[in-house]
Length: 126
Image 1 (tube, rainbow, N blue to C red):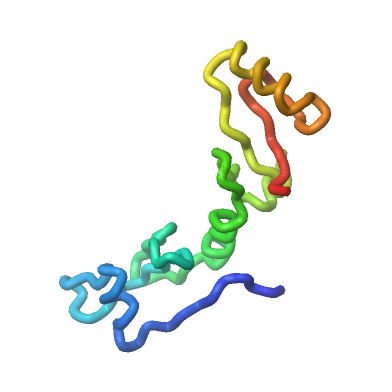
Image 2 (cartoon, one colour):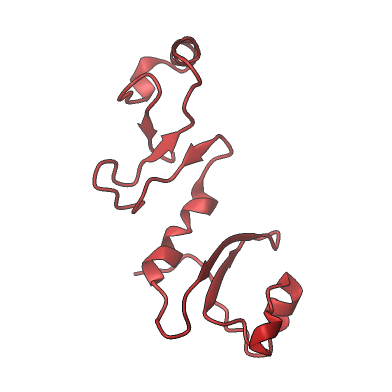
């Protein structure tokens, strides 16, 4: 399996200090936290685990969806990219009413998207 994200060990607390995530109550430890940081240095995901248990790498690997999303509004369903109903497809922003859905459908064309209801449509990331 090829991991498309960088994993960094921060033994000297340099990154934790720069990102402002050093927890004073834990002395110089960040605890058992995992952070996903975008290329602009913005924390996009923070996962905290009790110190007694290990982290779930699948949850961390799912975060790659944050970087694959186009700019339009969309959401990743639970267990993406292996969702039982949608596989690796995402859920596009829901229209606020039927009239808005009909306008959107007229604009983009019916052939491009699968509509499960007027407000609900999954789509690929392409």
